[in-house]
View 1 (cartoon, rainbow, N blue to C red):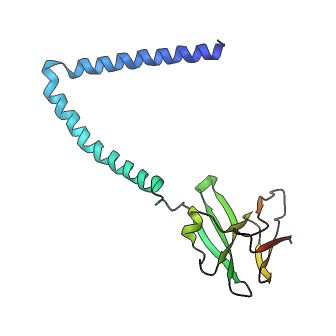
View 2 (view 1 turned 180 degrees about the vertical axis):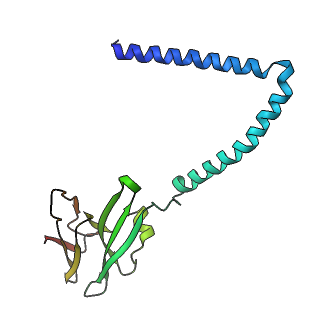
View 3 (view 1 turned 120 degrees about the horizontal axis):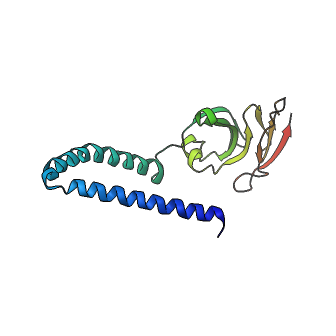
Length: 183
């Protein structure tokens, strides 16, 4: 057994002893015959305040995380849309950002069928139609070069910052071919 494992075991043993001593002291205090009723009422009062708060907090967590009502957080802003020449597909450029001080930001492009228009709520949860993601600071433009060919042009910001790029060569079902050009 190495030194760090011994130290961890020793720390865990000490923590267990302290916890056992604390619990036995609290139990002795609670079962003191002279203090049984006042302690019971005191604990019942604390429980009536703490229990609803914990219940509401847990319900909030369940609704946001388990059921997907959280919405993904952040701000989403549609920059542009362009319809394919035959009107069957729509390319949407939008920005997504959030997270506060250590936040995130990206410019995304989706290609949706006309029958399923762009939806921020759907993109927050599924992201099914996203074909490109570029770091913020870039300029992104889309242009249809035919009924099933989309051109996505993007700029790389100057300086030492660099960017992150995600590029798919086709849309979600392989119908629309996508070409990328750095401006």
